[in-house]
Length: 431
Ligand SMILES: Cc1cc2nc3c(=O)[nH]c(=O)nc-3n(C[C@H](O)[C@H](O)[C@H](O)COP(=O)(O)OP(=O)(O)OC[C@H]3O[C@@H](n4cnc5c(N)ncnc54)[C@H](O)[C@@H]3O)c2cc1C
Image 1 (tube, helix red, strand yellow):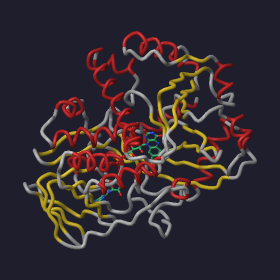
Image 2 (image 1 turned 180 degrees about the horizontal axis):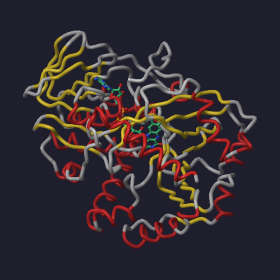
Image 3 (image 1 turned 30 degrees about the vertical axis):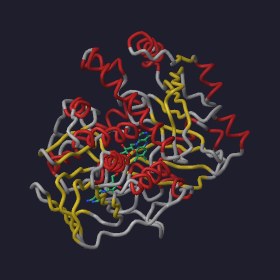
Image 4 (image 1 turned 180 degrees about the vertical axis):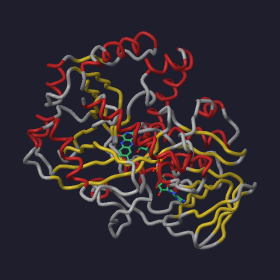
């Protein structure tokens, strides 16, 4: 768990917590409870699992160590890309067309699930459309056209465009992109408000939510006994939805994921005109770097910018100072813009950048390792885990069957290798 300052609300001091709508207080678990399912962790994975389970008529308890959306889900960039973390060209090379197509279709269903929840529960999370991927290096030239063609020809997705340097610059005022890929049906959202909306919907469906209730241990039995400091839950099924914050709770999952920290800043409000000059629309943007820079405008005309990672337990002492140079490299014209918020979060990555979703025992499920493509994948992981608990494993099995690898060195020695690897690739990106 990161050492960081928390506001009295229990949330980090982020742009998202400052603009959160309708934060409700859920009680701390203080006694002995029973449920059909106990979900551990209230980010996208856990909230989606809990809500979908409740809709199946199950009795669900959701235990969150801190607050709803406290983890990566309430801190992230808010960019919901189409497809999986790897594009379909890479997926076809690894898996062949049929499997790549199946995973693409599931990712489309994941985006639909997001839209569906926003509409069904009237979640005010500033849902917007569109994503531009800027090519930062000559090596990736031609990729936008190749990907747009593949999606149109083989994936029934004829909407994307390849934009040349001039067209790209007309949309994003940076000299940093040589060309770009534009997907009008990707999404962006206010991630913390989305989690708060899911929680409210889940509570409305009868999910018993407990905040500030960190799970210390659970038994590998059926039913399982899940213990927090002040109470316990006896449940037939357990869903582990702790992602990068899993720590030592379940080593068998932890050894296949690596927690990493990523950081964001929000400028002061730039005013409508200046913001529009910077990015002509409310779409999300990221580049083709190994450690991506990503950004978008907020509805109050700030630039929300994410960039830079570290692999330690601590965040940099001055996150604004850490992230600002990444922003200025792309947007030197923002050198006079004050940074009003700076925060970090922890996500988890896998060796092959594919999600790690599965079950350890017939009654013990987990979803994590979304490798930076976690909004739609986590939300969908929660949904397919709920389906599997309900007895329908069709979509769950597609993810369960994805290959997974241990980090060399297991949970103990994975860091040095990982740090070397990540540093190598990010340096290769820059030079
Ligand atoms: C800065 C940043 C930017 C990102 N940007 C994007 C983006 O633009 N697009 C995208 O698709 N993805 C992005 N991601 C990744 C994405 O946010 C995650 O993949 C996703 O939110 C994971 O959701 P989750 O529910 O699995 O995990 P989390 O949201 O991390 O939730 C895990 C929860 O479990 C709780 N928990 C942990 N241990 C316990 C315990 N023992 N007992 C009870 N509760 C526990 C934690 O407190 C936490 O609330 C970003 C991540 C970060 C950090």
